[in-house]
Length: 96
Image 1 (cartoon, rainbow, N blue to C red):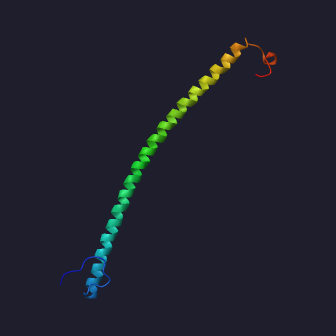
Image 2 (image 1 turned 90 degrees about the vertical axis):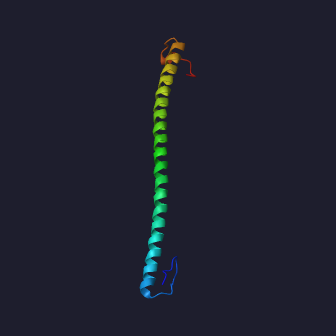
Image 3 (image 1 turned 60 degrees about the horizontal axis):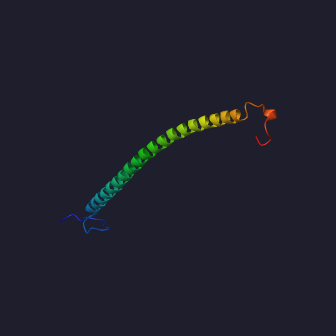
């Protein structure tokens, strides 16, 4: 007698074959689910790797920008000091 395939509630065979059919179906179903999960995990790992490199690059850019901003602030303070000829704080105009 041929074994039935697929998801059948009753295969027309004796109970032993029915149990066997169920486990064959269950194994295939679990294998399909596992394969789908492995594919999803693979995509997630790729996404994480990409995001990690982007975050690392942005962190480096941010560090460089902070250093540049610090240089600009220092230079601006020097320019303000030079513009006032080194006047003490008490002699500067009130808008400074």
